[in-house]
Structure formats: C-alpha cells, structure tokens
Image (cartoon, rainbow, N blue to C red; front, side):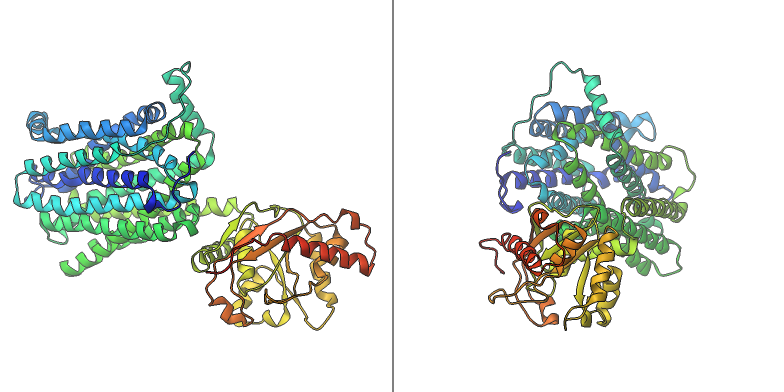
Amino acid sequence: MRQEPSGLLGNRNFMLLWCAYAVSALGDHLSEIALLATQGALEPGVDVLPLHARISFLFFVPFFVLGPFTGLLADRFPRRGLMVLADAVRCAVMFGFPVLIAWTSPWGSWGAFFPLLIVGAFAALFSPARLALLPTLVRPTQLVRANAMIAGLGIIAAMVAALGGGYLAQHYKPGVAFRLDALTFVASAAFLLFIAAPRQPRPRREIGVWSTLGQGFAYVGSHRRVIQLILVATVVWGCGAVVRSSIPAIVKDVYGGDYVTLGSYQMYLGVGFVVGATLLALFGSALRSEIAITWGLMGITASITLLALSVFLPMAPQWAGRLGAVAIMGSGMFAVSVMASFDSLLQRIVPDRYRGRVMGVKDVCSIGGLLLATGLIGIPRWENLDAWVGYILLGVVVILSVATTMSLAIRIRASRIPPVLQACLNLNEFLVRIVYRFKQIGRNYVPRSGAVIVVSNHHASPDPLFLLAACLYRPLTFMIAREYANIPIARFFIRLIDCIPVNRTGRDISSTKAALRHLRAGGALAIFMEGGIVDPDQASSPKDGAALLALRTATPVIPAYISGTRYSHDLIRGFFTRHRARIRFGPPVDLSDLADYSGDRQVLRQATDRIYRAIQALAPESDGPT
C-alpha cells in the first residue's frame, strides 16, 4: 500500500470521500420532512409516529435484502465506481420523485412512501463500498478519527437537511425539496470522481456468487468478536430508529411544535452527533474502541431515560422541550461514539478481501433491527399510537440497559484483571495519551503471563504511568520509595497494584523477600534501576536490586527506555510538566552465563551493568521533549 500523508486533513483522497459522504447524507434527509408534509403529518388527528416509521422502514428495507449482494459487489468491483453509480441513480429518482409519489399513492396508506425503496436500494450499494474503501485511503491508526470525522460531517449535513427540510416543507411545495435533493447527489458524485482509489485485488473467477456470499457469512460466524460488534450495531440501529421516529410525536403532542420546530429537534440530534464526533476525532486515538462502545451504550441509555422523563414529568411544554433537547443531543453524542467505534474495529480486524461482504452482513443485521423496530410501529394499524410514545421510550431504555450490561460483562470476562483495577488501567492509558501524548514505539516484549522483571530509566514523575499504559494486558508491581506509599491521593492506586515499599537508607530485607515472593508467584515486577528520578544530563549509578532478583529467581529481564519527558526533581511538578512521552522495549537481557550466581559481588555487578547497557541501547538518537 502506498504511503499516505501523516494527517487526515492533508490526505486529498480522504477529504474528497469526507465531502462526498457529507453531501450524500444531506441528500438522504433533505426531502424527508417534505414527504411527511405531503401526508399532512402535523394536522390534528393524524398519527405522525407510524408515518415517520414507514419512511425509515421502506428506506432501509433494501439494506436488509440486498446487504450481502452489495457487500459482494464492493469486493468484486471498483468501490468508487459503485458509489458514483449509486449517486447517479438517486439523482434521477429524486428529480422524478413527485411523479413517482403520484403513481404509487393510490396503493394504500404506504403508497406515497414506496419510491423510497429505489433510493434505499442505491444507498445500500453506496454504504459497504464507502466503508470498505476508507481503510485503503488512511492509515490503520487513523481509522477511529477518520470514521468520527466522516460521521460528524455527515451529521452536520443531516442537521442542515433537517433545518432546511423543515423550512422548505413549511414554505414551499414538496417538489422544491425533491429537486434540491437531487442536486446533492450530483455534487457527491463529482467529489468521488476525483478520488485516486487504489487498485483492488482481483477475485478468483472460479468461485461462484453463492459460494462467495457464503464466505462472508462464514467469516462472520467463525469470529466471536465480529458477531459481538454486529449485535451492538443491531441494537443501536433498532433503538435509534424507534427514538428518531418518536421525535415528531413528542414535538407535536408534548412540546406543541410545528414543522420548523420538528426540524429544530432533528437538528438537536445532529448537534449531539457533531459533538460526539468532534470529541472522538480529538481523543479517539487515545480511547480504545471497545471501551468507547461500552461507555457509549451507558450514555445512550441515560439520555433516552431523560427523553422519556420529558414526556412523563408534569412540567410546562417549554421546560419539557428543553429537557428533551438535552436528552436528544446526549443520545446523538453517545450514539456516534458507538457507531464510529464498531465500524473502526470491523475495518481494522477484517481483511480487505472480506471487508465488503462483512460490512454487507453488518448492514443486514443492523438494518434488520431497524426494520423490526419500525415495522412494529408502522405496519399494524395502531389506534392513537402517539399517546404511547413515553412507554415506547421506556421499552427502548430496558433494551439498551440489557445491551450495556452484556457489553460490560463481556469485557469483564475477557480480562484476567479485576474490574476495578482494569478500569483504573484503562483510565490511566487514556489520560497519558491525552495529557502526555504517550506512544509506544515498536514491539512490546513483556510476556502476557509468567514472572518477569521490567527495568527502565527514570527521568520524570509520570514514568510509572507510562509503563502501566504500555502493559495494559497485565498489571505491573513497582518497587517504590517507602515515603511515597502514604501519599493520600496516590495511596489507593499504590495498594491497588500491590507496590512494594523500599527504604532508601540501605538494604531492605523485607522488601527483597516480598519481591521474591511476587516473582515466584508468576507476577510482573517493574524497577527503575537508578533508584529514583535522575537528571539525564548527569551520570548515574544503577542499583543492583533488579539483577539480584533476576539471578536468584531466573526471571527474564525486559529493558525499557522512556524518552520525550522533561526532567523535574520535584515529584508533584513533574506531573504538571508537558511531556511527549515515548517508550521502547527491548528483548530479554541474556544472563544465562551468570545463572550460577551464588552471592559473588562481581557477578552481580556484571549483571547490573549488562541490564543497564540494554536500557541505554534503546535510547533514540533524537526524541526530546517538545
């Protein structure tokens, strides 16, 4: 794969895809309120909830029916070309939308919405092609940020569409919105034509269509992690469809609004998406996608609970409307973090040759959840369904609560670390990546199990946090100066990772015995060989403790070097100093020729010097603080 620019904003191909998706998203929603207006949705006695549900249902039916086939097309044909084709057909359909509505309206209560099947079919072709193309345009480490930026700009477009669509529906005939909608797809196709898309590997001709489709489903079925992500997508899409379909009924009956007000509340959902996407774009590289999914589900659940309260609590319509606006923005903010995170995980873990089909399977399942939810609302002839909107939202809260609990339980079962400690380690990793711009360079040689001693230089107070962040899969126990063990704020965390206090005054037999017990139990021990924070410009003498423990227990020693930090002898000031921390690990230090150590001081010193040289050998030529 060719080298891409280091920044997303400097990546021409990504920027073109970014703009194309935004304009396409504008087109998907611009005429939505105009279509509702053709049915007199806000007139007295009209149930708007099932009308909005029918729009979502018919638009997304093609995603469910055609998902595997459009995913296969994305793996077999040029993805950019498929997206341009989808835009061209949607443009033609929207120009002829008034004629199509007039033709299908006599077909019954669903008739006016049937033209959405054609628009949805080509949107279903656009979706897996876009999701499969993105990882070929950016670096793997940029996927979370790229997905967040695309989602954010897409939702800004949807927000503009909601406001503009509400204004057009209130002041103009529906045909105006339909024609403007068609022009957005022209703009999207124009952006796509300028993308220099990489060549796709040719599929093997001897494999039939049905066999190729089966490979996509078989890949999903054999990967538990992929199944879990698709289940999350299904829940979020299904619940999101119910909430979005509920907004018009709430605006009409609880907040007392008109079409413009309805557009405003659709905009609030978009504002939440934009805020969430912006936060994810800024901090997504520091936050693990699995964690973002779990916390995002918690946030969505809390937000929908607030929205239900705005329906049930006895308050003036304006105050209910404000509470509802906050709830809708919150649900959008957390929903985008979940959606961008599971898309990024799928793009990262699924090989390119299967990616389009897996995205198609994801569309089938997630849209299946949406269709089930909107179908239950829109298909039966419910009487006065709008009056039950609050209870419908409570049902969504129950479903999301179950999904959140299951997501948290999966994470707890997958980790061999106690939940409280794991949460603290995750929080530490996030903070050091944000505050100290921490990165690990190269391979981490620390084993996932078994006794090990990690030795490192020590020039700044946060150095232990960097080692913990680099070894997130297993906790490290530090040997620390005894006076630090009773600092009020740090005491809880020091005890949580079983740090071993050491006297600075001289040899400490009790701490040595504790370290030996820890290693013989298969634990991981971290030691700063210089005995404390030292000035990198001054010569230092390494201590013998790490070598003594390694020789007495035959434990492997992994050297590490922390660079990019600013030296400060003051412990507290060091935590508030700007750092650009980098850590490098080396292979185990070879002490096999010293294995017969029997207390010989010269052998011990030789082992200490060898370990210390291994640490210094990892120092970069130029990686200073910025």
